[in-house]
Image 1 (spheres, rainbow, N blue to C red):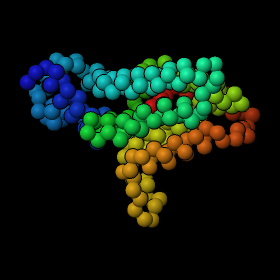
Image 2 (cartoon, one colour; image 1 turned 90 degrees about the vertical axis):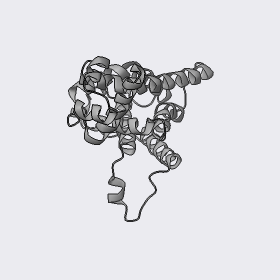
Image 3 (cartoon, rainbow, N blue to C red; image 1 turned 180 degrees about the vertical axis):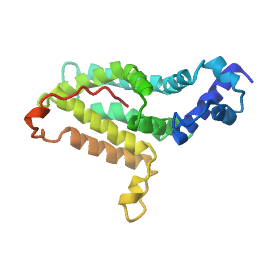
Image 4 (cartoon, rainbow, N blue to C red; image 1 turned 30 degrees about the horizontal axis):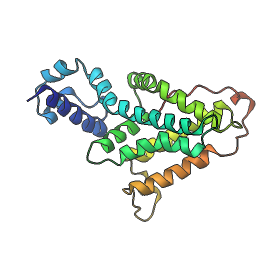
Length: 227
């Protein structure tokens, strides 16, 4: 078996198993068993379980973030000095991720479900890694949103961005809460309908009136997490 094929099989197996069982409960032996390779192959290609996790995220996040930044660059170049519409910014950042989540053949759906569940309960290691991986992307989109919404404080934009990330992560993580709140069966496999509903919901939240905050909430923590 070629080295590149072995590496790919390990990553594919790890992606599915981490999504199903989580990082802690998934052993390297279980991964190599699913990939049909020997245990030494993980050490040879990745060196450790943590490095395997890093590479698992990098192989798709690099493309995802490149697509986001390229599209944002294009829109800002077309707009010149004018601010973008909030809807354009959301469509770029979240739209690319939602389209990846609709990919059932290339592994995009499995990865985005893993990413959504990871955001819900990240370990310190994964949280730190993702914060570094997304730092430049979040900074660009935060700046674009601040320019697009001059009447909304930057601190509030960060909170709303945080809430939108949570909404997207929950929507794509494959949880079954929809069937708990709905008496009748709802079609949650329609990717286009999910995209339209979620974008409408997030845009409404982004444009919502400013909250009346108590004095002690005047200082809010920085939001570092991203999708």
